[in-house]
Structure formats: structure tokens, C-alpha cells
Length: 493
Image (cartoon, rainbow, N blue to C red; front, side):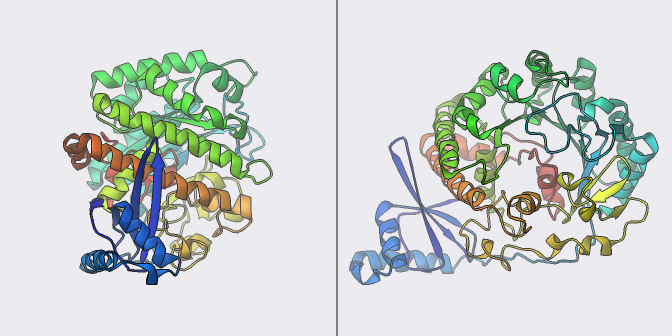
């Protein structure tokens, strides 16, 4: 399913009107709730819809009414959404394994107590536990297995990763189930040996780097507070060079995390990583959403930076043949493929997190939080997941999501963040919702501009594109094998 480009309009109250104007190029869209279609419309149609939404339908001209009926008739012919929702999953698609609850960095925004979570002292997973964790994931995953090696800093326990990969590949051959790997690393220990290994196996690699040296070294110092940028940059350059040689550059991503006071540098960070290292998947995320720290002004600054990024994406698409900023890439792919869902948070729904001791949690953010410890890999029962509230959640049975026009395409719902920032797992922070809706508008604008400028080339890229993986392990799962494969084989858009 792709964005529909039309010259007509509609009176259907099932439509949500969207306007996005950047760099002097206004774009107008509607989202059709019943079908999930995104429709680009001309300005006159948008204005007519706005009149209806504002209770001024009596001011429509006869020409406007005719156009609205024409679009309504078109939309009425679209197949309705078929979003089956089942609280009783009864299967997994994979999960994250904490191979290390230790870290060699001391990042200023770390939520995991310097990588140990709540352990009294750092700990690495042992060979027996990682094998049992992989056995567990293969047993509970009927379609294929997505394994995320997480930490702490996972490369502090590279031997366990090697052990886990070789063992999982053996299990894949025995069970005839596909297996995919993902590792998120601070890059300090990403040596040529490690690079060689991950490029020889079905890995997506996400390197955490916060952009230019002065920002990175402030945010991500070594444990003794010494700078880390130079080593990480050297290792990332080597990884990128080797990935290029093997045609695997699309499997390398960089994620930056910024503090609220650094939001005016988001574009600089993106541009630095993109141009200095030649990485084709770059994301920049805000470290906190605490309303005691973050204001609407901060989010508006963030959005202004994303608009600058969107403009650059239009300028460089002809040369690169890809969209680099990961969030925009996700939006474009989802709209093009009609990839909608009644929920987008995989925590406890098809995905779990396993700590160094084999304890199971809904996701990696909940590791060591006793209230969210579900079970253990040796005695897990599906009933344990049912105790987790998110099993009962979907976008159609809870406010404020139920009334939100973005619900079908929202990728920012996070049960952990909701719990931390609002105290209610189903209630997102208002600023997160504002950011989600406004950034989606920017993504739609970029989609339309790329179609304007590169229609034939852009369509070819869309046709062959497969999703880029999220840097969040729980967003790397979905309720069908197609999503497992697509989110672990990064693509070209």
C-alpha cells in the first residue's frame, strides 16, 4: 500500500487533516482511519475538509462538495483495516539477552546504573545461561528468532556473543528457523576482530555515538571520565570501510542521544555522522522526557532541527539513493507499505528481555525492576506474560491513543517511558505525543518532496526497500515472520 496522490477531496469525517510546510513547500494530507491509507491532497481539498471539521460545512461551494463526494466514494471502496488483536500471544519472535551487566563508559544520561542495572556489582552472562536463553527463544519462537545482544556494554563479553551466535546458528539449522542478530555497542571495543565476526554473520550493528567530539566526550566519557570519541571514531570508520567492501553498509547504524540543552545541535550531529563516517542509517534521540526538564520549547527546537534534516535528505537523495535519518526512513516505509498496527510496543508482546541470571522481563528497560520480573528461562509459562498489563493494551481500547489520528502509525509508544514519566503504562507523556505527531508530519512532507523530485528513482527504491532496524530491541519484533526478516535485514531506503 502506498501513499495515494490525488486531486480530489472528501467529506468523510473518518479523515484526519494534516498540513506540513517546510522550506516554502506546503503539503497537505489526510489519514483515513477506516483503511489506514494516507492521501496527499491539493490545498483546496484540505481547506474544504477543514471547513467541515470546524462545523462550517454550509460554507462549502458546490464544486468543493462534488470533489469531497468523489474522494469519499473512492475511500469507501478501500478495504477496511484488518487488525486482529489477541491478548493471548502464545509465542515469541525473539528477545534481548543481557550478555553484560557492566559497562566501561559512564554516560551522563544512563538509565541502567552504569550498565549494572541494580546488581551490587557488574556481572557477565556465563556460557550455560546464554545457551539456555537461546534454547528458550527457539522453543517459544515458531516462525524465526531475533536475538539482540545487549548490556551494559555487550562487547565486554564478546566471548559470550560468539558462543551465542554459533550456538544459535546451529539451532537454526536443526529447527529450520531463520535467526537474526543485533548488537548495540558504545563502539570502544569494536576492534577489527569484532568487526570481522559481525560482518561474517547475519548482524545489524548499532553504534552509539553522540556526534562531534565535544558533544560525544561530554555525554559519553570513559569510566574514569576520560574522552572516548577518538577510539570510537576509529573503530566506526574501520567497520564502515569493511562493511562497504562486503556490500553490508546498510547493516550499520549510528544512534546519538542528546540532552535537552543539546537539541539545537541535532542537525549538526546527524550531518557529522553522515558525512564524516558515510553511515546511511542515523538516528538522534532525546535522553529524557521528564516534564521537570523538558518543555514544549525544547520539542519545538527538536522539530526545527528535524526540518533541516528533511531538507538535506531531499538534497542528498539523488547522490545517496537513500534516506539516512532512521525515523523518516521508518515513516516512509510504513506509509508506503501500509504497515499499520493496533500497537507498536513489543514489550511483553512477542518479545522479552533476559538478564545475566536468566530472569525474564517485558523489555530491556525493565531489567532488574522486581515489579516487572515475569519469570525465569527455566520455568516460564505463558500465564506469566498475562500478568503484564501491556498484554491487554491496544490503540483502540485506551485513551488518549484511541482518539489520536496517529495511532495506526505511532512508533513512540513506550510502556516503560509511560510508567516512568506519567506513572501509568498506558498514558504517554503529552510532549512525546506532540513530538510524535509533528515529526510524522515532517516525514510525510519528505515522502512527498522525494516523490516530486525523484519520482521514478524514489519508487524503485521504495519497491526494493526493507525496514531498517530500530535501536530499541523491543521494536525489532512484530507479529509475523515478514516483520522479523524486514526489521533485521536493513535496507536501501
